[in-house]
Length: 248
Image (cartoon, rainbow, N blue to C red; front, side, top):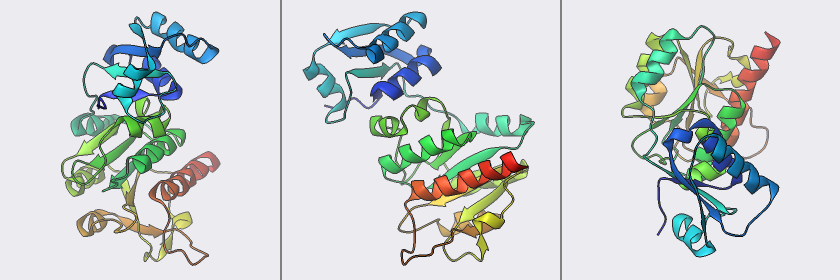
């Protein structure tokens, strides 16, 4: 049976030890495996006072199911959650332009993990998702995120439309992505505090979420495909922000 409150794999496990050692109950390592990457995890565990235990392959597979554990599983003391209030407080105190990623009903854990990895690489301050009809933070998400889930806050908003309103009240400009929008994403100003909203691949943003956006943007589609994978659209949008901020 898969244990939900875990992460596995070399990258995500090392990031967990380095970023949140106090949240870790123990680390399970495949017995008899000796190599540089496992040794690095052991060294970091000693440095951060995290308990390690050697286990056989069968126990690792019980913990993570069919996931590619790469010989290491991190078991957390408790589910790590970030609150809406904490993020809003951070936004209110920010002294430099914010970059936030808002995901509307992204249900595929692989997509969520890929979006988190992209957001962390782009230097985003946080990823916001909805509590309903969205992928939770699972071992699969952590694995796909490749360490980003331990480095960037993931906030689950109970009411995404209302949370967008609260961001706007703090001076965050909200861009939504929509294929029918008249404005290209390259025409938008990403040098100010911005939240980029990405909707589900099939349905896009929900109507109320779309209406809360300050502006709607589209990606230039030159072929016959009508839309892109959510994580690909995320990458295009966030790295347009990176480009503008580095040029500014």
